[in-house]
Image: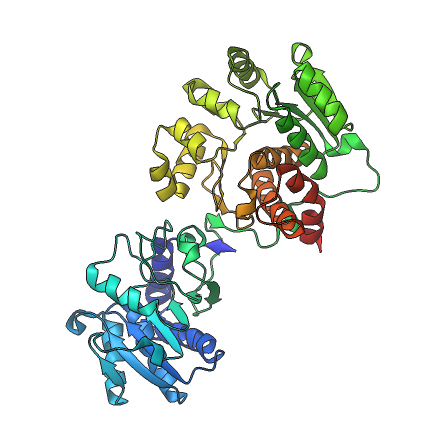
Amino acid sequence: MFLLTNMEMKEIERTAIEDKGIPSLILMENAARGAVDVILSHNPKNVIVFAGKGNNGGDGLAIARMLITNGIKTKIIFVGNKEKATTDCRKNLEILKKYNSDIVYGTEDININNYDLVVDALIGTGLSRKLNDEYIEIVNLINKGKFIISIDCPTGVNSDNGNDYGIAVNADITVTFHLPKIGLLLYPAYSHIGKLVVKNIGVPYICNYNAFILENPSVLLPKRIPDSNKGTYGKALFISGCDTMAGAAVINGTSAYMAGCGLVNICSSPHVISVIHNTLPEAVTTRRENMSLDYGNVIAIGSGLGISDESKELVKYVLKNAKTPVVADADALNIIAENEELKSYTSVITPHLKEMSRLTGLDVSRIKENIIKIAKDYAEKYNTVVVLKDARSIIASPDGRICINITGTPAMSKGGSGDSLTGVITGLMAQGVNAFDASCLGTYINGKAGEIAEEESSSYSVLALNISRAIPKAINEILH
């Protein structure tokens, strides 16, 4: 499913109105009809609609009229100067007056609990700053409602970057139009939208937008063919683990194998190799002093590597001499952060927010607030796929494409989860999946495996190897 920025949605509406000749009031009517279908499915007896002076408020007024014509007792709270309302909003307000509607201009003496359902049509998309005191008071009132439906976007949410500026409507359902707005899938906005419902409003559908979520990940899975052997499904070289973090290498290799990789070679210290032999006997192992970069068709480096002088030299050597794609994770990223020249040698990087902070020199808070732009800018500047890990991980391609991953769970907030992700992505690349598709699919699979691991234990108890071992069930779920 494609996702839109506010500017892209405005351009779609402009094309519909100016180029296709569809009157803007028809688009507003279509939006209202779609929202009313959702509202009526909840069988309310009385509804209160909060409408602002913009086109989102116009949607709300059209919704109120349709509810009235369906016999639903409806009260309308109009917020803002009606003389400054948009043309279509003002038109719907004039029509409502002819229906002898119950319209008030203010929120005094409103008992929100007298209504079965609250419609939030105050601002919608386009908000880029914190609400003023008047709107904060109204949002607090709306949030006391029994059941809340926001139109297009909960009031208080920035639908481009997902910010909520500390206060926003907590909707039970958000009815958005044409396609989801990109910020609605990000936190903290996602915690405000409730169930997201998308309604068609009759504008042209164009399939060339840059941002998307995976709805059918099975199309990216590499095929398994009858006439095959381990070489068919690729060889992955993991340069990972150190004496104090041997588990990272185990998790790397396990997840790569579970994702379908034909052969895994783990290059590490003697101690790590001993651990591998006892935990992942399927893996081939190589001592660091015998490392060959000619092995396999993809290299992953950094998980549990440490940042010793030896590790720093190793990362530099691998990045500058590798003839195959390189996935850089964890300590490799910290080493790369100190060497500008190394940033263009990777095919995929998998930083969490703190690692991205080191790579970019930006504060974590700034990255969090502009996560899509920062991931996109880095990918384009250094010609590498960026998998920026967060509650909603962002996968950015050098060509400008953006995937927002919607799988995962707080149960994955444990050491080693990222090592599993690196293993899955690398295992998929070994099978011939390109770096961006492998990153999108690998992030989806790893998150889905985390969800399954949580179901099998608890939200408190998931370990990284639980995620690795749940990958087969995640893939089966995708396939079926």
